[in-house]
Length: 89
Image (cartoon, rainbow, N blue to C red):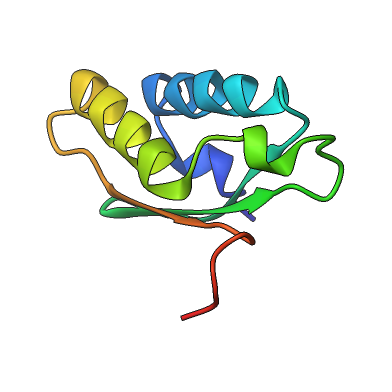
């Protein structure tokens, strides 16, 4: 069985790891929930964060990922992050 990470290219994984590292500084985690060629879906996990409000807002995180993915991929996937600080849709 192929894992979610196995479906991604090395440059895409490196971009995800880069952002995950930024989030972990404030105690949060970025968990990859779904990966396809045209979409990446993440859960932002803040349960262990000492300062959940210190973690960048969802829209900003999505913007960073989208910009960085465009730098390493000719057809970057759409990025969606579920943020527990926002009401469920």
